[in-house]
Length: 294
Ligand code: G1P
Image 1: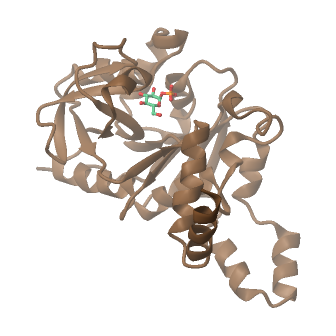
Image 2 (image 1 turned 180 degrees about the horizontal axis):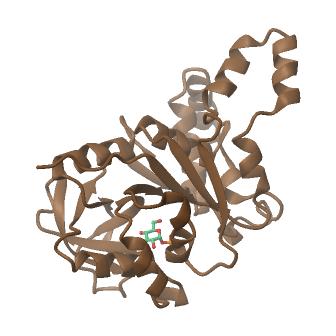
Image 3 (image 1 turned 90 degrees about the horizontal axis):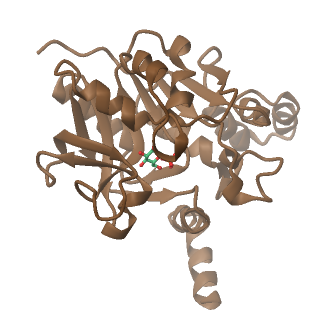
């Protein structure tokens, strides 16, 4: 088996309007809402960095400039922390900053769906396989979900990968769903995919969790892709087309950790509690306060 091309770049579609979080998201992008003390997008970028990603590609939109600022130096703040000898705080801040030249920002100029957002990154990604991480979905486990996928990518000898996890049958219509050869295996060949199947028609209960490794051949398909579910250009539809070519197999990688859908209010609140409870500096106090509250 030849060694597959390394996954160096990750795409983060961050153009969504966040209407479900109004009025919080009127002037603040939903990706900048905090889970404990980091914006949601920082958690997801950290997951990608843990997986060895070198270049971070953000597909943004109008009103999202503070995401770009977040991943840059903040000179006054850094100088103030240094002046006050707050070395630890300064080091922590700098540790999460991507290296100079390792971020790219492009804009999705109109909200035409996830497939269109990914297509907007085509020139920056170029002709190499890449990772795609949907920032709403926080994957919380002992290891980075994307790192597990990249390990699987090396085992399968390349191709395309989708992270999946089971959802209750009455929720399958809210997600992309995949059918697989062996539902119990950690990595299994994908046999079917469908975006938001009507209730009762899903091929399985394994939902697409928002982590992908994709070959660049997806881009020309996205360019031709017609609007699908919800009138949007769907990534899943282009993946279905690509999977019909035997040279571009798809595997599902089952994620066994917990996924918090921060696009929903309950998911977002739960993520704050779960991430807070596991922190040494906050967990004990938070646990006691929650017991009192409930
Ligand atoms: C997108 C994908 C879907 C996936 C979901 C995960 O849907 O199209 O396949 O299951 O993200 O969050 P959206 O949430 O953008 O409707």
